[in-house]
Length: 113
Image (cartoon, rainbow, N blue to C red):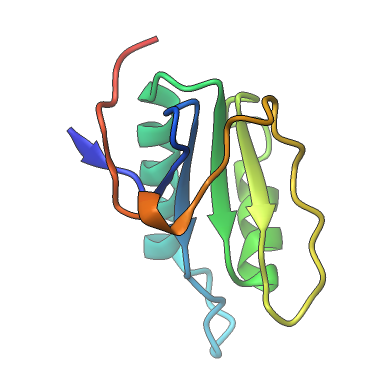
């Protein structure tokens, strides 16, 4: 069983939040990229209609998108929520599916698709 960072009340939306940032030395943050791929693997196994990978640093988000091009299933939406930049959230598929603070760290069984 995996604890996702965010789960909708009806379990149809799951999200992993990564707060990794680009290193000041401008080296490729391979461990952070690897950890983010691991999060994508957990999302891929989840039985949910919508799967979100939320990255909180725009520079790391762009770097990860560049490195992961074509390697992440299309069923996973990569969302950058950098507090320094405005962000447009992906549209939810159902109005009844909403992410709420009460669902943080909710237990959601990861199943195979």
